[in-house]
Length: 357
Image (cartoon, rainbow, N blue to C red):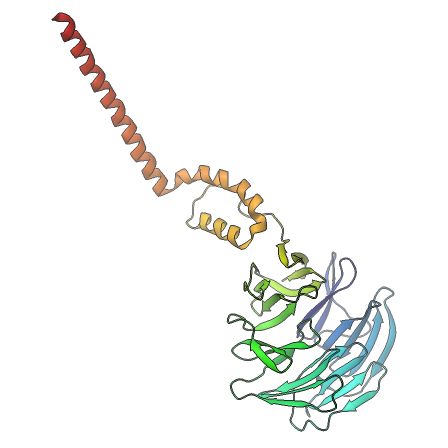
C-alpha cells in the first residue's frame, strides 16, 4: 500500500512498504511512537481532531495525539493480520494464514466475523459507504444497509489489489494488465496507460480530476475528458489537500503540484529551470527540443522559459545549419559587393566615354 495524508500546515504521514514515515520541513523519518512502525503498518488514518490511528501486522490498534506525542488508546488483538483498511473507528482486516475478513474497532472489540465468505481473500477496502474484499477472480462487496455480500466473478482478469480513490462509493482495483475503478455495479478501465498503479486519487473537490502514480514514480494529473495535462517524474507519493495536490519526492520532500478551481487545473510547480540558465552554449543535440517539450508539458513555466530562450537563440550560431546559412549569406554579400564594384567601374567607363564624344 502507498498512502499519504497531510496534517497541519506542512506535516505529512506517508505509508510505503508497510513503513510509516513522519515528514516535515526538517526531513523524513520513520514514525516509531509508541512502537516499531518499520515494515509493520498495514493502514493508518488521521481523524478530524488530528489524531493518528494505526493498525499493524501484529494486531496493534493505537490512537495517537501527534501534537502532544501521547497515546489516546492502545489495544492488541494478539494475532497476525495480512491486510487492513481503516474507516473512522473501525478496521476491516484480513487474518493472516487463514485469509478471512473480520471487522474490528479501536476499543479492542471484534465487531463481526464474516463466515458467509468461504473463499480466502487477501485484499480489502473500507469506506463510509461500503466494504470490499477480493482475491484472484473473486470480489465481494457489502454496502451500508445491506446484510449480505454481493459476489462478483471475473474470468477475463485477476485482481492483484484494492485501493482507496478518495470516494466513498467507489474504489480502485488493479490487475496484471490495467487499473480499474469500481462504480456501483460495474468497473471500467481507468486509462490504457495506467499500469503498475500505486496511487490513484480523485480530487475531493472536483470529482473529474485524477492523480495517477505508478511504481516507476511517474505522476500524471488530468481530467476525464483530456486524459492528463500535467506530468512529473521521480514522485514517491501524492496527497490531495482539498483542491491542492502535493507530491512527494524520492527523498521525502513535499511540494505543490496542481490546484483545481472551477473546473480548471493549474500547474503550481516551481518556475525554475535547473540546468537551462547557464551555461547557455548549446554543444549537444536535443537541448532546444528538451526546452520546447518542457514548454509543452509545463505551460506554467512559459515566463521562465521565455527568459531563457533569447540567450539560447544567440547561441544557435554554433549550430551546423545556422553556420551554413551564415556562410551562404556572407558569400552572397561578398559577391554582391564585387558586382557593385564591377558595375561602378563600368559606369565610370561609360561616363568617360560619353564625355569624350
